[in-house]
Image 1 (cartoon, rainbow, N blue to C red):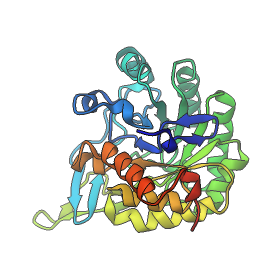
Image 2 (cartoon, one colour; image 1 turned 180 degrees about the vertical axis):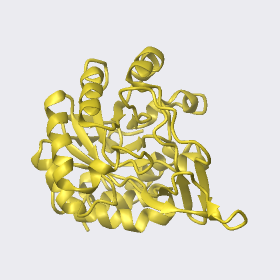
Image 3 (cartoon, rainbow, N blue to C red; image 1 turned 135 degrees about the horizontal axis):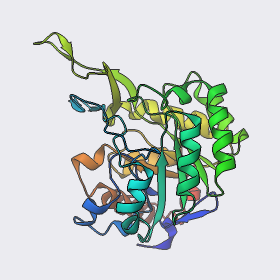
Image 4 (cartoon, rainbow, N blue to C red; image 1 turned 90 degrees about the horizontal axis):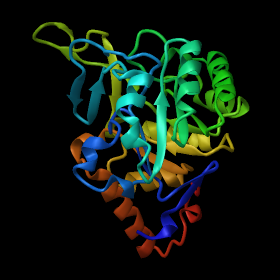
Length: 301
């Protein structure tokens, strides 16, 4: 792999722009058994809350014609469980290590961030966009006034680079992104899943106990691409683009509308080696098109 894939995001340097999205890659252990995950640019770990969460009951995953619905509900070991059982593997990976943090209250967010900021990680991804928990999560990510409060407090709680993961269900995605920048975020991740639903016609009932779930995969890519384009034209901080990326061409589209790096989620469940495939595809494209740096094509649209 050549160093022309290197990308600077805020104060951090990624060896390439391909990051595995939170909730689809665990903490990396299982994928390490399949390939050398240190070839990736980074990993955003499974979303962590201050305390352990069991997640939602009933169906959690449902395949659609062009994607996937999930209602996992932020099941995770909690911050202390992560530190005790997962951190020793995660912190020693030679890539950019991002911890995704969720919460039900501002106080929970802040306490979790303060604890994690003492560990050997590189970046905090503040998740204010999860559609699958009844309290918190996306509730913070719909209205920019509410979002400002949690971003402002999170900014004060850590010196690590702080990225805010936004919901596509926000009332105004541009106002939300501008609020992130004004409150001191170092970057933006977008988009998380879209609020959606599915019905079992035999039982005449919802597939999911919470009625609604989060839609991801190829079905959302055109909408996610539009949102990344809009946001990149309205803020000066860098953006992680994501939403239905399944190959290197999708990844390049997000870079061409302005994303500095891209995150891959649902595609990991289809092809566990998708990260490597995308890295190789981008590198081959740059060779064929005589592109020396991704800066040459970033934001050209």
